[in-house]
Length: 475
Image (cartoon, rainbow, N blue to C red; front, side):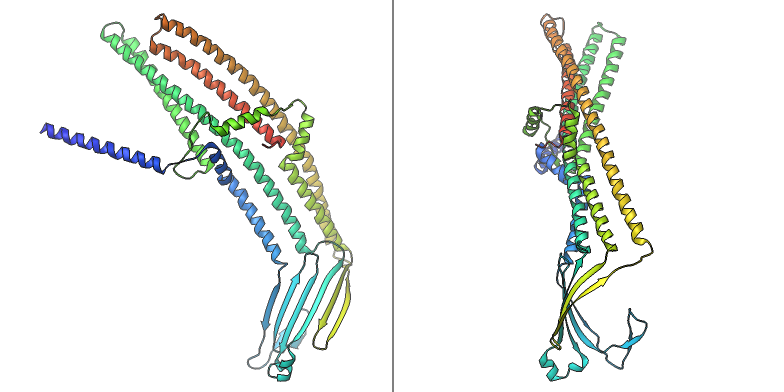
């Protein structure tokens, strides 16, 4: 009976093992691996904040498409037949009433960007519907053309198009800047993950050493070479190592999950963490090849002013505000329209000039003009403020780079010191002064110093990338 239970348990364990192995294979098959470069490119396309900017660009492009529809041919057909009796139709431009006879009307208009309006109108009135002679002559038709010749400013539709194009340029510049900035952020997270992975391996090695040390203490207790105090110290050290291992695991997993979420990766996607990533090596070689003189900040600010998206967007806003001011100011001037028309009813044509001038509007135009001038002056003040803020940001980046460089030197010296001590430990191991496990534990200190050095080097790289982006130097 016991043998049968034993066989059943063995069968269950084998089944669980097979299912687990199959599940692992399935997960590996369905998991999609992306290289570092592919992951960064995916992130700058699908990150949530980037997608918001893209959605805004799509809205602006749709607005431009709607404006373009104003230049298309527009055709309208209308019919107002009276079935029974008659009626009086109230018009908008007079308080009196007039009789409106039934007719069918077809009107086509075409607007051009230079302000020219072409219009044709074909109509068939009630008395002509059953008159064969009239029908054979064809419906009444008129053709007219109208254009404002003064003041020489874009028509309202073209004004909206110009301003909307500026908004589109601003959004595109913001998108490009944010994508470049996000790529640097993603790369920084990748490097942090590499270091957290190394620290996790270090914590695992330390836990294993402390576990082995406890086992040695327990064996010594059995032969009377150690006591309760040594056992308690070993168990406390093991608990501390366990906590550190769990913390290292949590830090790594949280950073990884946060990075994957920021990249907005598809479910099941994995990114191998490799120190020797060809893409990462390419970035390092490129950034090291750049010769940047960070001492001449005035010259560097010239690059910032020439390339930074905030400066460019402010100048576009100033341009839009200046144009709006000029266009609206022209509203105070006399308006002159040239028009011409032709009618096939009597084969008549004519041309004329329409002159209009708004003598008084109660001060509305003046108030609106003052508001636009104030807006333009505010944008000019913002320009100076942006330059001052960018100058401060540049100074902070340069100062931070100096600190990171000094920190790198200090970590390098600490690592070199640890390597010298490592040679001393090797001598002690050969002489029997250190056990193999104690020697491996000593090596952990050298490994920790190496990780600190790599982290310091990562900070130098990332900050330099941010300086390069800030200056508008592209790869």
